[in-house]
Each structure stands twice: as structure tokens, then as C-alpha cells.
Length: 489
Figure 1: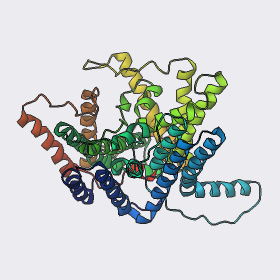
Figure 2: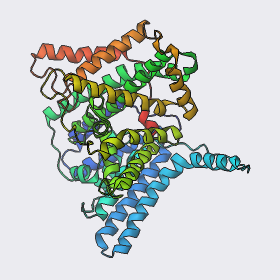
Figure 3: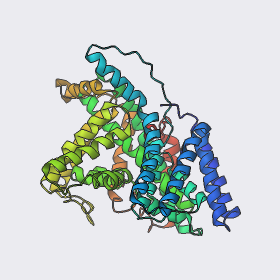
Figure 4: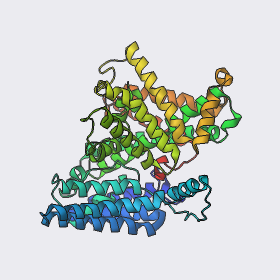
């Protein structure tokens, strides 16, 4: 993919300047007129995205125009065949863009490899296409609009500016949550009034998101990258450590982004859907997928799994649909066989639960109202977490061969040796922060995010001491700046 070094990262000085400017204009200059506010959101969102590469704004604008026009067409059309043509226009345009920019080189390389396997050499140059940041997110978001209008679940909008704001809303434009038109679009029709308590809660969630990203994810990334990139040089125990570092990196990185996006939206009077619900405390894989990247999991459930028949048919249909949704979900993450294997592996994890009707056993929060889980709950959590860590190895590996070598390295005699990188100052500090992070997440698992209620009833000096401690940790112990992982998806 192309470089995102010029992108306006949430943890950058550029964004720290950009956000207050937009906030002041939004609440003090355009607050009397909804259309003007929405226009400001569109303009700010285009500046935010164009900061990386203004040329790719044309894709967002074209997709916006196509889906707005499809919606208007569906509003006037009663003929079912013509309605299907309109829907397929939206699907082909959006998935066509996504397929070309994200998967062209992948399919070309595999096409050439397949023919060379049968003795036929084909010469062709890949295009080295730059992947537009966020294309996997905004194409799915705008597709949800066309599909829901087609299904008559949503009235098509006549307000092009509100629709443009929905498609390009800058807090969640490049890495979600993938919002449904039924949830976010109507919020652009209503007058927003500044809510101090909502804004304070938004700032608290932004703070926690920044802590996750800068202190946990960026520090874990340093060791995960070192170990994965030099995996042949390390013992099995160190490779396990590398997989654990990546496990916390990807969660803190992606859920941290979602926290910042949701918190920023609250500053502007918008509510975004929850994207993570403490997934590493899950007691089985089905629960994990109800709690991990919720906006994508639920998107595939509603627009792929259920239309395919869901779990209503016989055993064969259940198996087919489960593999379909998990493999497509894996492929959505990137043009690499590692993601497909990661998806298929999760399908293998999930199927026994589905086929024995145990996939909806754990719907409540683990150990709700208690300080500690039971031994049984802890055992199931550790098993689920271990399966997840194992699957993440394929997600992080450069290719299938690398993943197999990495796993082979783990299951060697050196698995029981003392791991490297854990006893140096940096490694030890990172491990301590991860442990503290897990404890805070466990304590706050019944809230919308870990510190949603932490310290709320404390006296003000103590509460602010906690916030300042988090800020100091961000500035003092923050790792080397890393781009958000999901920017590459």
C-alpha cells in the first residue's frame, strides 16, 4: 500500500490543531444552520482525507454521487427488475473500486503462479497500485445505504449534503466504525445542541483511546515487529511472547482508534455504534466475534450471512455459510493468503459451537457484578484467548510460509527456555503497562469503554490526578509513532 506518513493521524500534531478549529467553527459559526453545519462536516472531512492524497477524494465523491443517485432512483422506481439493476449498479461500482485498488495485483500474481504451475509462463507487470486509505470502510458504509433503501428499510434522502457528510464523516472515515445509514444518516437531519456532559464523556473516551494507541499498541508494536521480522533467530518462548505482543498491539491499536473516533463524534453531537466490547474476556469464539470489530461482523451477518440462509438450513448450509462469512471477512482485511487462512481458522473454531447450538451461550458480560470470574469462566477465557493468539500469527505473518515457520519455531524444545526482550527496561515496562491495561479493562468491562465510570464518584482532585497520570504516561512512555494497523485495510 502507499505511505500514510502524510496522513492526519489522530495522534499527530496536525490533528491536534485541526480538531479545535473544526470544533470552534462548528459550534460558534455554523451552529444556527443545520445545512451549514453539515457542509462544514463535509469540507472538514475532505480536508482530513485530502491531507493524505487529495487525488483519492475523487473516489469518495464519485461513490457518494452514485449511491445518492441510486437512492433517488429507487425512491421513484416500483418495477422490481429495474430496482435490482439500480442496486447492482451501486454494488458493482463500490466493489469494483475496492476490487481494483485492493485486489488487482493479488489476483494477477496468483493467476500467473497458477499457469506457471502447469508449465505455462505468462509475463505481466503488476501495477503497484496505491491502496486508498479507508476504502474498505467507506465503500461498505455507503453500500449499506443502497441495500437498506432497496429493502425499503430506509427512506432515501433528498439532502445531498447530509448524505455526503454521512459517507465522509471524518472521525470514522478511514477505519470505522462502519456505520449503517439507518443509524448515522438521520443524525444529520436533526439540529445538534452542545451537550457538556456528552462532550466531557467524549474527551474521556478520546484520552483512553490515545493511551491504548500510544502507550500500549505502539510499545507492543516495537517488540512484535522485532520478533516477527526476525523470527528464525528466536526461541519458541520468545516467539510466543511476540505473538502476545501482537495480540495486544492489534486490539489496543484498533479499539483505540474506535474510541477516539466515537469520542470525537460525541464532541460534535453524534453517536457512533460501539465497535469493541472487551473481546479478550470472551468465553468462546462466538462471543469473541460478537465483541470484536462489531461494525464489520454485524455488517457481514446482515448483508451476507443472513441472505445466504444463515444458520436456518441443514448442516451443509451452516458449514458453507460459516466458511463464506469468515473467509470473506479475512479477505476483506487484505490481499494475502494469510488473511484467508486466518478467516478459515476462525470458521473452524466457530463451527463446533454452531453445530451443537452453543454459539449463543455467553451473551452476558463475564462475571457480571463480581470482582473475579469463576474457575470455569477463567478456564474458558484462557482457552479462547489462546486460540485467538494462535490465529493472530497468520494475520501478522508476511506469508503462509512465514506463519508455518513461526508456529514450528514455537513448538520446539526452546519453548521452555527463558524468552528474550522481557527483562530489558523497555520490555519490562511494556509488560507492566499491558498488565495494568488488562486490569483496568477488566474493572471497567461493564462500561462502554474501560474508564467510562472509573473515578466518576471520586473527589475531583483524585479524579483529575488519574487523568493527568494517563496524560503523563502518554507523553512519557509512548512508543515510537506507528500508523494505525487498520489503515492498510
